[in-house]
Length: 98
Image (cartoon, rainbow, N blue to C red; front, top):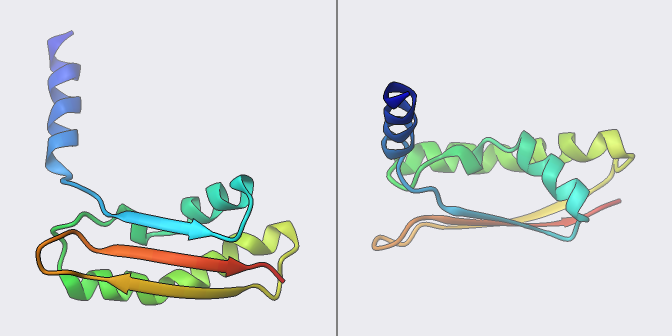
């Protein structure tokens, strides 16, 4: 019984702290689907800034792909990314379903 608990703790401690990725402009259902498609929210704070930027640039296409099954084929995504030197990066996506 101890081994599974130790394994889970090791996994949790090994992944670090994750930044806050905010999605606005969509219902809770759509937000859940968007976050399921988004790869950026899986990146830890200590990741290389170039990797964060790469994932950030790919995020609007991932968001649009997550909305299409719900009939939103002409959505618009406004995005912002902040990478302050003394804090974890923060990303915000405002979606206008179309």
